[in-house]
Length: 60
Image 1 (cartoon, rainbow, N blue to C red):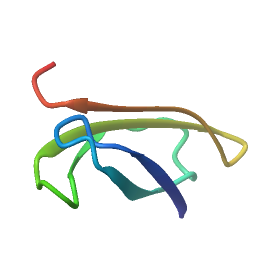
Image 2 (image 1 turned 180 degrees about the horizontal axis):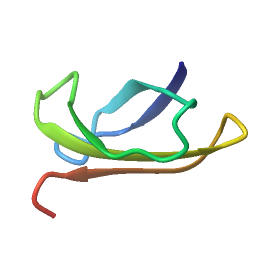
Image 3 (image 1 turned 90 degrees about the vertical axis):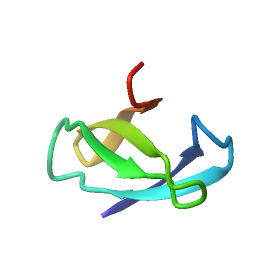
C-alpha cells in the first residue's frame, strides 16, 4: 500500500489515504477522516509510483 497525503477539498485539512499501487488507475469515493465528507479520489500509478492524484468534492 502507498500512503498519500493531500488537502481535503471540503475542510482543507491535511489528510492521508492508503492507495493500492497494483491497480494502474482507479476512481472511488472515500470519506475525509477529519470532516467525514465524501471525496472522489482518482490515483494513477506507473511502475508502483504515483504519477497523478485528484481529490474532488462529489458533484463537481
